[in-house]
Image (cartoon, rainbow, N blue to C red; front, side):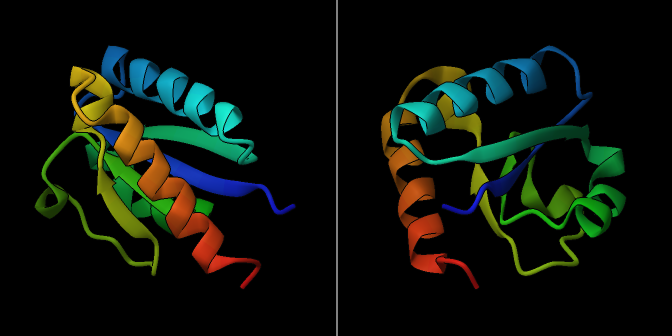
Length: 103
């Protein structure tokens, strides 16, 4: 099975990104979805997206805060911070990645 790339975009790239990455990794493992997770600051997002070429972008900031020069789908990462809707978000990401297949 393909290992998917997920990029977490956070405001300052410190504790928020660590929390999001940890919860995302645990959620993907629980759902048997191989994922490589990387995080970055919002000011680094556009360049990181170009270089990393993620399948999914998970953002804890407004999606208008950065340019997405790829076809990666952007999800709000706020549920992973609040816990409200976190399971549904993880299920939605997995469903999207499965529908994307090995394109």
